[in-house]
Image (cartoon, rainbow, N blue to C red; front, side, top):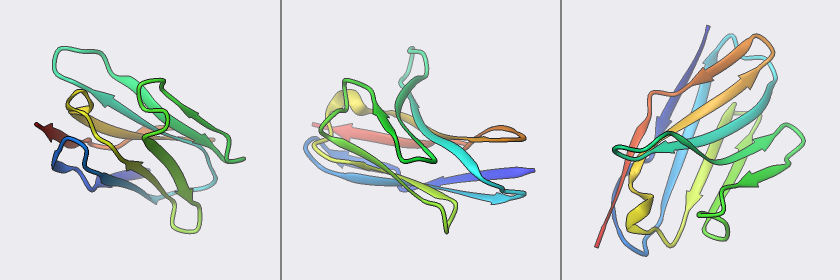
Length: 115
């Protein structure tokens, strides 16, 4: 089994920054791809950013230029640096890991941006 634990969420004012982390533990082999998703109240979960094992990155248009995804394979951890946060970034953020044996989700961390 693989467990993903997220941290770093919280309350921040618009224009501020937060850094999310997600660490994998358990029977972790090579993580093929990491992703960050978010789900706002009343909305569907959406992809925010992902990064492959080859470090190819993909971002949602709404976060391009503001968010940066990175990974540390030695620590089995993925990060999401979020700058210039906007009210509409408020959501529960989830990490996801793609491994050969399956896909796994974190439990989610709340990010609230206030005016």
